[in-house]
Image 1 (tube, rainbow, N blue to C red):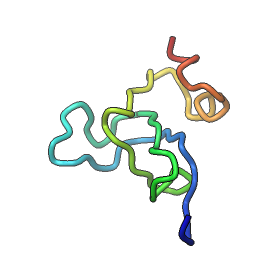
Image 2: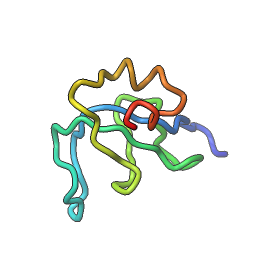
Image 3: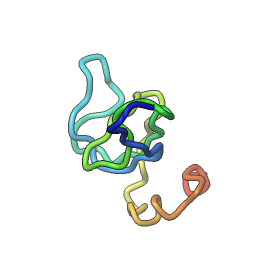
Length: 78
């Protein structure tokens, strides 16, 4: 692994921007995602990058604290 490296695989936040072919999400959406393991630009940052296929909407009632406190984020959504 080259230095510097930003680790982290779980992401939760507000969408800032989307790629030109992304239609499922828009800026302002409340989402969670899984960052590709060992890839650059991990989730331990103010901004993070994730593929659309690994991103999903969070229910409005779910807080970021709830999401960050779970080892398995899907448990809160099922």
